[in-house]
Length: 319
Image (cartoon, rainbow, N blue to C red; front, side, top):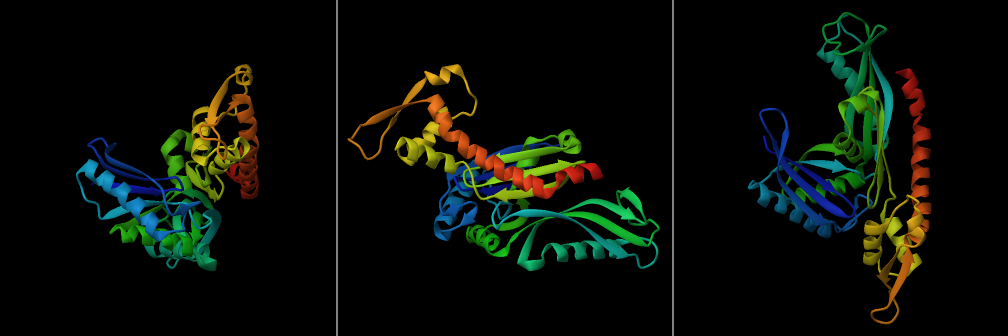
């Protein structure tokens, strides 16, 4: 089958269209990449502008792939995206675990995860337990009375999520599958062995910073912090008194956190705003690093706070 995936970010909207081959590998058919408009920190602030960006990205991918898509998988980062780990239990009806018992456990877990007006984005089963037997792969058909599931749910505030879904639907696309952006990023850059041993992936985007952690091959944490690399751009623009577009260029081409002796002497020129036409300034890479480092340290501190609150050390010991 031909599938399409859409990522609506703060700085760009990307659409990928792909299919599989006989070996189960994905084959890219088309890609659409457009500057994002009407989006801030993953949330829709201008539906009309956001719709134009999505239409342009999807249309570009469709023309390259030679297909017209009706359904799409959507990466979600808005609505204070957050994961939670909990346990759901139920007594089996006949002394043997069956489909009905499994469904009751999962329904109870979904109800717990969506309390307080939250909307379920992803729902994972880490492990099943039956009468104290741990690590059961599939309890159906096994004898036991007490059925327990270790669950991970990723939820978002309903309003911001519905706004993103509405923009996609206005483009005559059905968002038939949702994926948390931290989960999608981590799956793209890690291997199965890394996820089994334990891995943390931090993705600093333009408007958000996402993090996802895996233990034993299962997702144990997925969160989004509404700060990103745009703040670094604004810091450079203010410090150097240069336009934001020029600050973005400087950050992309010359920004670094790595100290080097040559950075003290290597300088670069840039256009200055508010002065005479054609006015330029010069800055060394060491001075540029001094502007970037505090902001990155601040983002890292926020990530550390979230990780400490998630108690991943306890989760690792439990495994």
